[in-house]
Image 1 (cartoon, helix red, strand yellow):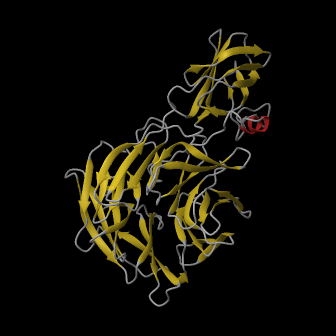
Image 2 (tube, one colour; image 1 turned 135 degrees about the vertical axis):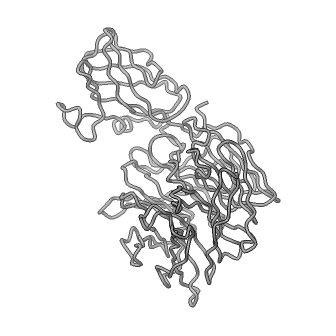
Image 3 (cartoon, one colour; image 1 turned 30 degrees about the horizontal axis):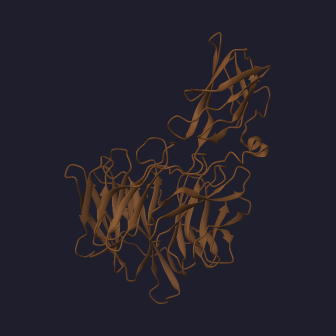
Length: 488
């Protein structure tokens, strides 16, 4: 899926009430070396005439209205300050400190430059010096963008027609539907050998004509055959490439460049042929000379039954790692068929694994559902040190169909977790889990009730704010809904 295309975004920031002095201290930036503005990790500006040493606080909800202090050198009594294109109000300059009131965000959340201009025209800019956050998630009413008589089991996002904009695809029983960024829809009925599509995944490969292709892999209702379909822009339809069959049911299907050759492999978990308590893990590779995906022997035979699996770049080397959860033990599986590092050993099984940088330290973390104890478990990646484990109660039932979706839902440059109970029949607030700047777990509700169903997060209308796409399953069929994120 398209982590390769777009980074998802999210909705929890600091409330006015929680903007304590400790929060402000954490959110400020100061120079580690008072004589070196270019020190590694330092965020400051030195134009030669104006020097910015710190901004406190560095983030605030989009409503603004709170005080801010800018410390530095070279300020004049008349020094104007812009956050983005909006000026501070109530500006006062005392020695080497400028104070003022932050304006309300004008159009979007996220990062903005801070620009200081003296009365003599001298100027300094702090790139991305301030962040407007959304708290709680503010959205417009959901809008239906696609309806079908079949129900959907999952939704993915990728660029299928090559226009560098996000498209939306969903599984729909005997076909899949795609909503292209231009607003047109394409529905593909799956070939007879795939009578019903119960799951879809996107894959990327370079054809023998050196054309980069984004395709859809489908999994049929008997769950032992995968089909691959690529979009032909000139014909405006999806064309069948080939199928891959397995002896036993496919339980999990993922994709990523695991062979590090520029082509996505399709990672498949099937039941083991001889032991119902075990699984096999296969990697289906793209053969460029034949322009098809071809099966290969399982890279893992008879491993313990896998509760969940994701591809996540925990090692920060640009390529995805295979992360597997089985009976509470989360490990990295190596491409060569051996087991790598144990990430965490948790006392209960973890399902619906997802990944993101929860604490903003630049390392990818993971999270999963502890259905037995009705908790979301956050596992923080500490590099060579043991992982830290945090838990949160998010109001879901152990018997419910619950998924985790990661994204920076509040524009604070840290990923958050949305907890969606897909089996709900009534609209309910979305549970959102995030870490505060001090590392505390926060669980909040979205500002409005939302439909339940498979969901993806992204800036689909490209206005700089986080949006949602939700597939609401009805008694008969599916409504695909767009929920626009907005600062108003």
